[in-house]
Image (tube, rainbow, N blue to C red; front, side, top):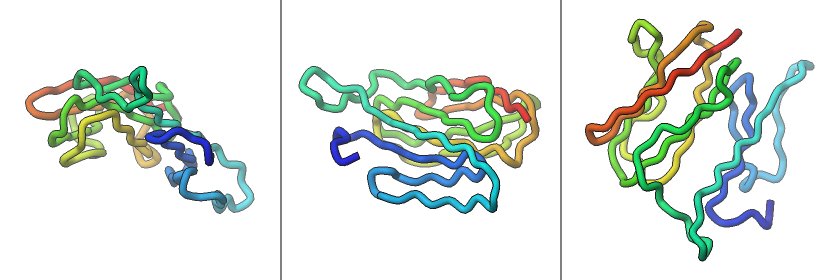
Length: 145
């Protein structure tokens, strides 16, 4: 990891608990497994670069593909902001009831990601809604058990 480019993020995620470890800041990764096998994902956030290698800001407000979709217990959501603004990223069930608020507040321009740990949610279809400065976009996701 010593030679990882600037602006890259490497995160180790315990799929069961949602515990996240920044792999650039930690040389050792210890998870308590109580004798059970655990599933992990490694999330790499790599910014778009221009020809000179400088990080580029997104050109539009966008809720990117959620992955994996369908998912079992945790889902990574990524979104682009072309300018700094107040953001809301919420999950709703198909009745329109709020299930969980994932992001509320000021975020800088750029590409952002967050993991929804849905261990307490029931299997089914959910809508993820991203709002900022009068713009709204939604994406359908499916939780399997």
